[in-house]
Amino acid sequence: MSLYEASFRVKHECPYREISERHPDLTIREWYLSDCQVIEITSSESPTEELLDEIEQLGTVLHKSVDETGLHAVTQSCLCSLEDSIIERFEEYNALYQPPTVHRHGWEHYTVIAFDEDDIQALHEDLEADRDVEVLSKTAISKQTIPHSMLAPVDQLFDDLTDRQLAALDLALESGYYEQPRRISIRGLADRTDVARSTYEEHLRKAENKLLTNARQFLRLVTATSSTDALGVERTRQAEQAAD
Image (cartoon, rainbow, N blue to C red; front, side, top):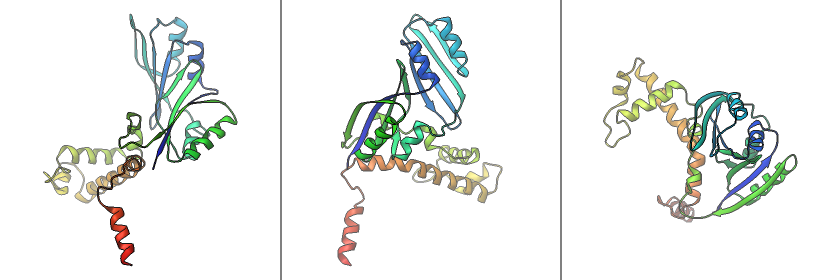
């Protein structure tokens, strides 16, 4: 089974794209987190006062430096509405978005991974209906290893976990609960908190379930590129069918 990695660029209304069009020496990288956007802006040229003012208006400036190497700035802002966004369109066509989005020279650059080449084609046709789109590359991935672009975004892995569930999971990891043999029991972990054993265990089990559910799409990507059935699942299934 092959995967397909496609890279393309689009033009539509977006403040970051417009800034990159006005300042062609800039590279703007955009990440979506659970409740905000993080923007990294870099340039090898000294920024103008106009550009520095525009950066201030993008959101909270977390970092800004200007020296002989040029400009480096990081901002954070509230997550804009993703209703009818290009990210949602990726999901409609079973395409896994690979952040960050890169803005250069007035174009937004995206990379996605899909299981079916037809999904890539259908996505391209859909996007063409209301914006300029250029496909830069489309590559079949059939190797045993996953490229670095497949690293799972942290916000997707921990999506929907509550603060208490994250705290329960962190305590279990730090205390050796997942080591073999285990260095601590559920009761021992609960004794280190101010909640009952049953409450702590509920937080931990929900955290495990959500984490594994979120990781499922990435696990599918890993197993899809592997020709080796390490557990012999397929052979066992075929043997059972033969016995019937």
